[in-house]
Amino acid sequence: MLALWEALDDPDASPDQLVEQLNVLAGLTLKERVPTLGRLSRALAHSNPEVRAGALSALAGADSPRAHAWLLAALDDPSEAVVEAAARALKDAVRGDTARWAHLIFHPRPEVRRLGLVHSPNHAQWLNLFLLEDPTLAPLVCQHLPEQAGQLAIPVLDWLERGALSADQARQLLARGAVTKLMDLTIPGRSEAWATSRRLPPSDPDPLDSMFALFWDVQGKFWSEVNQWLASHERRSRVIASLCRTGLAQGHWPDWVVGLLVGFHPPCLGFAWLPEAAKRRGLARLYRFARQPERLADEELEQLLLTPPLVDETGRLDLLMVGAVLRL
Image (cartoon, rainbow, N blue to C red; front, side, top):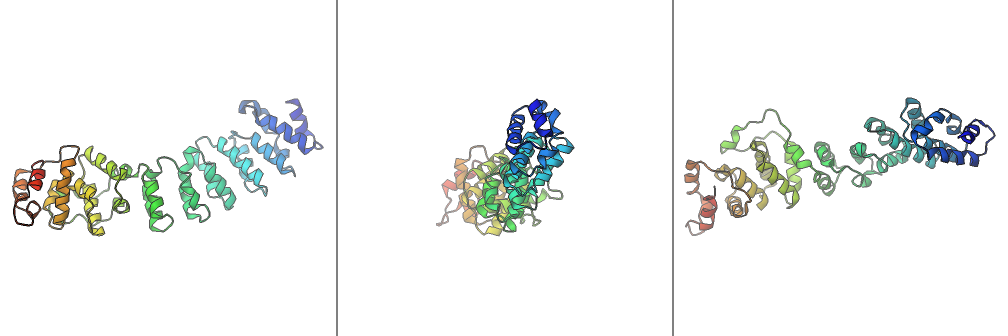
């Protein structure tokens, strides 16, 4: 430690000597380094970039205002090695303070933004989504996102609409927990009354519409998560309304969608605007429904037995459809 102090105070110390001592310092614990950190100002301003980088490495984990100011100032250094050393030291220094990492993500220099992306600590990875607006970094963003990136579903859908994301990229992000996050949102002013009527679903927009449209023709885990959410919640009218509204906008009804509608909201079988073929396919999927479908009131069941979905091309009752209805 004495050799380090002497080197830091010696204006004639060679760059190699300084780098050697700074590397020794960087290898110590933060507690051991603290007494010497205040003496790094000369090394941080040294003409040799290796010395500057070594001094920055010694600041790793230091979160005092003075250390933070030194690290941020180094992001403007002309040497790439110095800037990277500053980024690595900042990663250890931010300690859960996401706002500090934003200095890298929103830095005017593209090389600093790239370092902010590739070195982002776990707690700050959601900030990387903002780099979708950066044409040079956008292709890398999806490789550096948190597991629960889908919890930022609304911004992701907005970037998709504005063309900053492709449909495949958006699906990749939204597959990470987005469906339950969006369906759990409470949307003020939504009426529950339409669900028991035969009218069209409410026309006011819902972020769920955009998400369902994105996955509409893609069978897989996404729709399994929708199924699980519907099975564990009693207040489903918002999700059912969004499925109906999306189907009307898309102009077709995949089997996995009508299966959810029939299984979780049997009154949809009485909706005149839902195609008869879709109703039949939804009824057929009840045989594979993992849980007891929602029950129909007796009068609704009696009315349904006289409707077209239960009648085949010859005008006779379709026993397969009747069997499905009897499960309701």
